[in-house]
Amino acid sequence: MNVATKVASDDLAAEMEQLGRGARAGVEALGLATTDRKNEALRAAARELGARRGELLAANRIDMDSAAEREIAPSLLDRLRLDDGRIDAMARGLEEIAALDDPVGQVLASWPRPNGLSISRVSVPLGVIGIIYESRPNVTADAGGLCLKSGNAAILRGGSESFHSSRAIVACLHAGLAAAGLPENAIQLVPTTDRAAVGMLLTMTDHVDIIVPRGGKSLIERVQRESRIPVIAHLEGLCHVYIDEHADLAMAHDVTVNAKMRRTGICGATETLLVDRVVAAHALPPIIDSLSGAGCELRGDEATCALDPRVVPATEDDWRTEYLDAILSIRQVDGLDGAIAHIGAYGSGHTDSIITADTARAETFLGKVDSAIVLHNASTQFADGGEFGMGAEIGISTGRLHARGPVGVEQLTTYKYVVRGAGQIRP
Image (tube, rainbow, N blue to C red; front, side, top):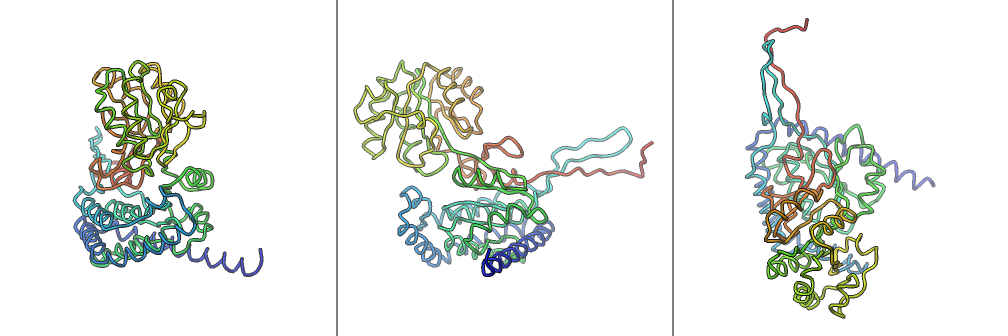
């Protein structure tokens, strides 16, 4: 390491240390904040997003132009893009978070003891949360808002491609905090695109309590490999739709097309379609027509390729791939058991759906498929905290410890035990 590199590294380490100290002070202030003040900050930030719309679009234009020069994939460009509708959605998300019940200070359980002690389990914030994410600038607003409502300080490290957009959004969040008399260091953005900052954040055990990564497989694997701090994460959104032999085929068509094509670049997009081979000859042709007509590339097993020349042969890797693009794998299976076996072998534990009119078979699927979200007769694109009534989400956790599924305000709390006595001593 040359002298210049070492100086730069030392400067970055000092900057990250300052962020950590600021976040710890910020979480202490939020711990004393009333629900009304937190909600005031959220609503003020929502107004700022609307008032600064021009600034947000200008910042996003810089990011979009840079991404286009680097020839980033169209699906990633779509995730990066801000427009009036998406700005309105961010503001609406903050308003919805403000409208939620405060998850902090809730008595989750309480009971008396024979010795007269009264014991309660009470919800409290997790603390300082480091959030590392890629591409989507709306995550900046969602993550900041969710952490604020749940009493957590946030250190946000967005992707380099969304740096200017995220900085403009954080300015709105800071304005909201200031309006409510809360410290700006409750929500901070890592002020550099230097990848070394991620490595430093993952080792800040004195200041950061939880790491939440949101992005592609390589990012998640790096965070889980390098972090010295507990991680709430999802791996891939390798989502499935299964069309059962008892499915309403018109419904199956509409759900499948939506599940794949509504937005191909999100983690809730379906990547593999499974069809009971008993109904495949009737179910698949209209689905293939619609998807192919919409520009979706189709890859199938031998039986599916035989139905339509537009379907190209799938490889073994296709069953394991999260495309995040207009590509769908199709496989015919031997009934419900075949679908469940395929999902068990290839799925990522994210979101899987069955289309069937047989409620008993649906219940079997819902019970046996071990994913964070399982659906009956609905699109996998409903895998979203906002659609669950959570206002927003930081991500979809596919893990089993601390949170599973959409991570909203309740999932960003833990608890402590409060014990009240009258002078008891233990014999």
